[in-house]
Length: 468
Image (tube, rainbow, N blue to C red; front, side, top):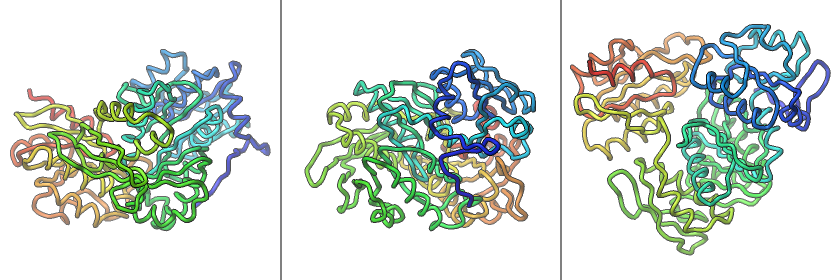
C-alpha cells in the first residue's frame, strides 16, 4: 500500500495543509474538482464556494449535482478535457479517477498543484475547533445523519460532510466554524489525512479487497486513524476487531455496545412496529430510555454511538432523547419508495455481506412476509474477495435476483460473474439482465421487494415503480 503524508507535490514544491486551506478561501483562486458530481466532491465544491474561492470542475455526465453547482456559480464541464484545468490554482481528484485522466496530465504539465480529495478535505478541517470523524465498515452515513440531527437540535449548527444525502436533501450542511462532523472513509487510507478531535469507530470488517489484503491491514489502518483523535476515541466494545486495537490508542477512550464491559451500555427493552425502545447506562449508572423510529437492530447500535458522542460532548440528555426520536432515516437505507401491485418496495445501499444479511433480517422482521432481493454486486474485487460470505448472506432471502456486477473503477476478473454467483447460491437465485428483472419478478416471486447494492439501480427502480 502506498502511504502519503499531509503534503502534496507541485513539481519539486511541497504544498502544506495550511497552504491548501489558504487557497480554498482565496477569492482570487480557482479550485478545480475532477469528478465534481460525486457526493463527496460535490460537498467539497460547495464548501469551497462558501469559503470564498472560485470553483470549476468536470464530470462524465450531467446530473442534478452538477446543475446545482452551476447555479451556485461554479464552472462545470461535462467530459474530462485538458483545457478544463487551465487557469486553476489547485486540482482535486478522487481515487476513482484514472492516472491517465487528461485533466490530471495537463495539470502536471502546467505544474498546477494536485491533491487527493482526502488531502483537501483534511486541510479544510483546520478552520473548525472541534472535528468529529465517523469511521467503520458499516453505518457511517446513518450515524453522521443522527449526529447532525442531535447537534442541530441542540442549536450548535455543525458543518456536516456525509457520504449520502442527509434528511435535508443534501450531503452537506454548512454551519458555523465551531464543529465539523464528517464521514471518515477507510478506502485507500483516506481517513489518515483527516484531523479529528473525536474519532468514532462503529465496526471493522474485511472490505475494499482491491486495496486491503487482510483484516490485519485494515486493523492497522483503523488504529492509526482512530488514534489521530486529540480529545477522545469512542469505540464499539462489541466489535472484536476494534476491541483488539484499544490498547494501541493513546488518547482517552470510551466504549459503547450491549456487552457488560462497555462504558456506555444499551439494551433493547421493546420492539415497535418500525423501531425500538432501548435503555442506556453510563459507567454503570442508568441514563434512561430512548426511542428510534427506523427498522434494523443495527440502527440501535448506530443510535447508541451517536448518543455516546453527544453526551460526551456535553449535550443535555433530554435534547438528545428528543432528537433521536425524530430521526426518520436517510435515502437508500431501508427506504420505502413505493409499491407494486400491493407489494412494498424498499431501496437499500447494502453492498457488503454483513449489510445484506442485516437488511434482509430487518425487512423480514418488519414485514413478516417473503422477501425478494434484487441485488447488484459492487466491484469485481469485493465480489471475489467475499464470495462465500455473499452466498451465505443472500441465501437468507426467499427469492434472489442478481444483476450484472457494477464495475466502478475496475476491470472484470475471470470467473467472477453474477451468473456464476446465482448458480452457486442455488434454485432460489436467478441471474438476469436489467430489462428482464420486472417481468421475472412479477411472474415468479411474491412478497416484499428490496433493491440492494451500491451501484446504479435507477433504471430497474424506475421500471418497478412504473405499472403501465
